[in-house]
Length: 178
Image (cartoon, rainbow, N blue to C red; front, side):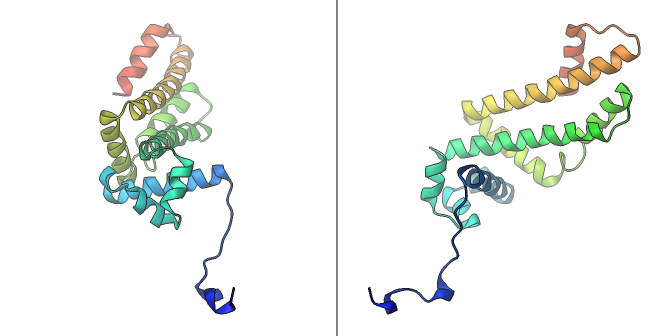
């Protein structure tokens, strides 16, 4: 092949092969960025691919459907929200009441609750209304958050000498997450 048929070196994109997990994470992050910028309607495969400089075919290689990508992004969003709240436990005091307070404050503060996060959460809820897989992700992540909250309420309530039965604690945790 003649040398003139190749693009000049300056015009070529540099190429880095990423592992499958890293590639998926980048696609999920780009999907969340696309939803934050333009809502769920703006989360088009072509736009997501353009955001991170890949082809739409790569997205289809990593995720069977666009819905699978959206569901994975929704799961990541909700897991990150719960993780950010749980990370506050390390910052809380030694007492059970302090740990519970730290978790609750983190659950209603940035970065868990900020304009971008709320936009993503609302978009994810909208998708859940239309899709059973996304709805299942919400159920799983809600249960994880509620279970964490329930264990903190349990510890705080037991520390005060109050009754610690599971039905009462589940009711308190469920009421707090509505």
